[in-house]
Length: 583
Ligand code: OXD
Ligand code: MN
Image (cartoon, rainbow, N blue to C red; front, side, top):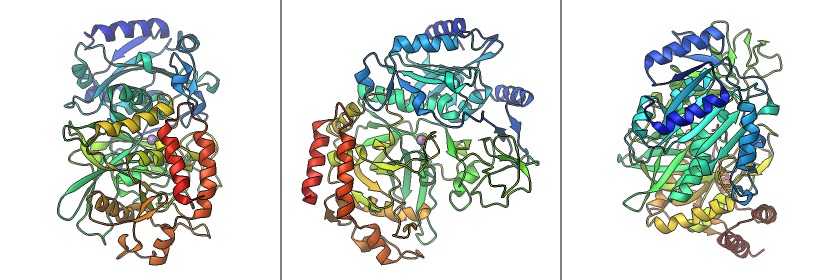
């Protein structure tokens, strides 16, 4: 198991630093899972759910001041500050190693260090990458087991190579004052201390598969993106794939697990991934996407049999619930579950809770961790070594007025501009204010491991090596009426919009040219059998309001002005937008 010299040497170094009482190398076996679960139940770190209702189900509470990603404590540690860019927090590598080194010094005394080898991507794919996470948290181990291909499979893949991501995590004192998530892209290293919340500590996810992988992707000529991957099968049995980027908690998991409405008979939707896409140019000149993860770490509140039946069914077994309501019968409940609440229970903080006591029982960012293979809509192609070919890339967010339901960019470069200027209301997935409009280029603002200007440049250059690139679209499911009511039903009905998108990709339908891009003709969005949406509403949904865009471009100028390495092409696209509007 630990015959790899580079791994052994690095683990020894980290042991010297953190001084654990024990070291356990994990192989990913079932017996190992049982043993660790028993131990976590004994210490109270995990609570066993009713094993009849939730076979293999576990419950966990984080510390109350440790419930989300901490962007202000997340750093990109490149040798040069400019390489991290103006949108990342930066710390010099030497300073970060010294500062965190002091916190890690002896942090595992009296604890066990778990050595977790893990693989991002399918075992049969040459595209996959290995990481090793050292942690003192069984919660992390049990989550990483679900979210990655963990143990022997990863060591076998690594063989005697020294090419792996070195991840060190310690709960430390769970003190927000001593909490840091540092990335060293030049050293293939991540150090995370002081947190036990998934996004900060499951190092294979955001830290590796987005921040470090985006850096690797630029060097190696591919893209690591914050995107779901979804296959749409038409009634003829042809499957086309889309990749879509939305900021956190904008319904990515729901779209990834879309259920076609009954009125669109003959369609099927296939989930490939719900959060991350690694995309490379295939031999056929198309972009092929792999989901590097093996599980879903989804937001719980609002999930129900109507909004996302596939997520509900995925989480009935072998699932870890974090920070939801725990009932005396050892079942779980949350706001928006559309199930009668328990008469009394304990809330996410462990306090007695009754419905209607004015407090949320589940934390708004409470989560489920569930194996992807359990998802009823999991794509037969989800573990394809080559990935799946992407026909369309979608950008989007929550915009009450500006963005129409859907539009297509004129070309790749303008599509990059659309992605680069995307915006949405903030949500609870990251700590901070909720409901504020924030620009989030390609939904990567918190996840890009290098200077975002260089990132835009990398996107612009990708098309040069992609003879057959996907078409780029923007969608907005959240447009509201003057009264503030949503105009579009969303969820499964979004398939109607995806159908227009795929028809455009296949050259089967025309479009209206507007200053922002190509829009559907009102009658090209199929609303047959859709109650509550009139042709007039579709008209409003597709309206490009000149006055609002006048304001929008002013805000865009401010935003783009923040980048120190903004590619000239992005500026040109901005100027062209103004010209097309004739502002
Ligand atoms: C996530 C996020 O947890 O984007 O996926 O915050
Ligand atoms: Mn995400």
